[in-house]
Image (cartoon, rainbow, N blue to C red; front, side, top):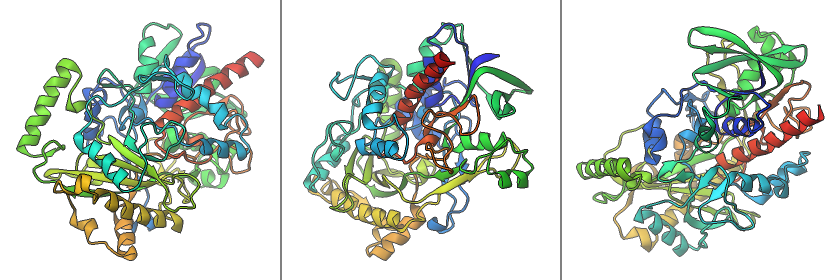
Length: 533
């Protein structure tokens, strides 16, 4: 028995476990379905490029067929390791726009406006550039400039400036708009995931903190409407762990709703049809799933061996990089590949940027799962505020089955229109003198698409996630919402959800930093509830 059971050792779970266990009088158990984060591919920043091919620390989900993607199934990689997706992602540190959080508060979620959440972003952060009104030092999450950015990343920024975008050296500063290099969650040439920043320093040092890896939670157990514990499988053993105070789901936007539904919390008719006993009819569980839909323009750049790629010179460069990283934690393998980017407006009347670009110093096809020879670069464009909505539901009452994931990509016409505009803008940027004279050539698959109709067809045949699913346990006071502004599940006791699934609307950027913020705020909410009890 523990005071708090935290289900899911991703970004939110690691933060929450570390913060709650600061009180030595409180016992905390963190449960992670995957292994510890010991792999060198996790800690070496460039190692994540290989993780899409490895199933041992990646759930490797797929969506149901997507009508908006010509019936294709999308790929949904999620981290199955301590640190979760923050241990396998590109480490980009983005908070989103002030307006994102003002929207959360306006939808009936007091305490989640920009002025409310900024202190939690600052509490989490140690920015190597130093502290100011928006940034802080001393937090567990190390935020740094890239050690050795590729020269093509600087050339991309120069090309974007030539195309009319302003320079922006801090996408988390007063304004998001413009082009620049991303800051990353790294420290000393290694990934600084929330697991490494928050949890690792306390493992073995806090007797009140227990971390169980390779421990898959099958369901939450209830006594009436109160959550009392979880049923967990570890190895060949199935057992029940009990919670004196609360069970907190931190399993992410795909698996927190799945665990709720397996536990009998969700749409009653759907659960009954699958033979799951209904504990609490809560029809919003799994609804409102949405994600940053994204498409990539890829350029071939033969002979540019300073870019990553498959060739003999490229292999020699990589080998030298491995040796340097092992000796010094420096060199080309400290890259996050998506080193540079931009935020821009698809139309002049957009109040804030609604498109994000990620410039990648390699040819990226099919999430890196497709082997391509030679060298090149890629530029992603994603819709920051997608209108399309989907859902995640049980495919089966079997707890070991993957959930049925339907992001509803491109269901809303506006999302497709923005991607078409985005592709045209990417082509304009990549065609500017800073890059155009270096021999890059757009791959034929996209280069042949010139009219709006042809570009739309290319988008539908190639677009997919950029790995930011949110919203499936939406926070709000409405009948289709799942948690309240304290992140407590509506209609139940002793149960919260703390992860990206609670976002009422996706933030305008990468989602790790906002998820850390959510968990930092949740720690205060949980502690306040304990004091009031």
